[in-house]
Every structure is written in C-alpha cells, then in structure tokens.
Image (spheres, rainbow, N blue to C red):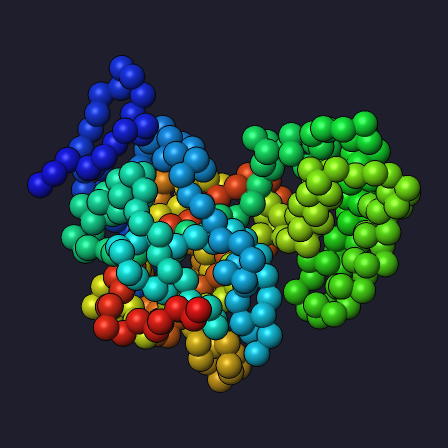
Length: 329
C-alpha cells in the first residue's frame, strides 16, 4: 500500500504517524437509527487539517451554490464543494454537482476514514459554515473589519458598507427567521439595508475594485453567518449512493450539535411520539451513519447564534457510477 500524502499536515520536527489507531466507538441507537461516533483526529492534527482545507478547497458560486425547493431556486445558506474520483456527479435538490479531483489533504482524510471504518469512499460533499473570516477582512467590510482601499474614495466606501451592516443588524431577526418568506425578506432588505449602504455613492466615481467590494458586502449580508449558517433537515438517500456503504461525516472546527428526527415523527408527531436524537460533533470527530438510518431519520445542524467560529463538515460517500444523473449543460 502506498503511503498517503501528508505534506503540509505535519510540521518540521513532528513525528509522522500512520493513520489514527482504532478509535473507541460510541454506539448511538434508536428506533431504526444506527450510528457510530468517535474522535478520529487529535486536536493538533485536526487544526492542521482545517487550515490545509482552507487553502485547498474551492467552493461553488453562482447557480451551483443554489438548491431547488418546491420548484424555486434558493441560495444555499453555507459554502459547498464536491470532490471525488474522476467523472463522478452528485445530484440533490435539483442540482447536479461534478466532483473536482481529490486534493492531498482530502485524500489523507479519506484514507484515514477508510482505515478507521473498513469502507472505501469515492466522493465527499464539503459544507463550510461561516465564522469570523479574519484572514479575508482586508477585502470587504464585515461588522468591525476594514474594507481595503485602493482609491481616493476608499474611505467613503468603507463608511457606506459599515452603514449597511448597521442596518442589516437592526433587521437580522427578520432576515434570519426561517418562518418569514423570501419575498418579505427581500422587501425588508431593499428598504432598510441597501439604501443605507448606497446613500451618497451616486456622486462618487467608483473603481471596479470598489464596486466589487460593495457587491461582496451585499452578498455577505444576504447569507446566514457564523452560527446562523445551518444545514436544514434532510436525508442522504440519493439514488446514486451505494446502500451497502454508510455515510461517514468528519467534523473540523466549531462544535455544533446534530439533530436526528424520525420521518414518522415529522409527519405525525402525536401518532408517532419518537424523541429526536441529539449529538455534539466535536472538532476532529467522525460520525458513521449506518443503514437504515438515512431511510428513516432526517438530520440537521440548527442555527446557533452564539457560535462565532467556522466549521467544515466532510461527508464521505460511495457513488455507484451507473446510477448517476448527468450534469446539465
């Protein structure tokens, strides 16, 4: 067996180790729910893997960053990316995402998961829940961060972006409420936030870079941030997934709680009083969702406003090539 690529994961002077030794598994069971949970990486290794992924992973933008819900397309409230073997396409919620080829760090994590579980995986879906992006604040204005100025009107752009954020904060309770329709949120945003950000700029000669900064700031406002980034209730039960292979979820970064809810309890809670199952996903942890979990149980990461640091979730799957839907041109 070839030794996996660990370049950039271990610093000079560190003793390189093979993949983690067999980890002590915690069994999580309920009616038709079967999961195994354990710590796959130490804190030090998990930190390094997180930083490597921040450098390597390219996230989707534009139409690829949207999902279809009841016939309408909506932006995903988090960053997403797909990686895997050549030619693989993953389809869900009306979108078809072609996998980019494995990066060295993703290969290392994939092989560590295989070593710990005994299952081989050919695909990973990456979800990045936002936090305070300290490394990028020089390029846009977010809360108390500074927009990078490249022209004589840079300070004015900075003030306007700050004003926009002040307006956004005043109505964030509305913009982040899942019970309020997108149409109402759009009206609130156009009435309160956008005018505050654009006031007076019609008299300023903006450079392309400054226009881009305003656009980036607006896109950031239209997305859920930090603990308000979330993953809604869903099941990983797509047709192209191999039913004999579990879903393996690796968590890096902020600790977030995962909530399982039985499909019958979602439809008729009084008739089927099945209690939800909650689990804290620690930094460096591995969750194995065995069959028939994804047939009967939905899982989600709820909004957590107190969470201020980012989290990367890597869900490894095995896709059967003959069952794939072709990506639309």
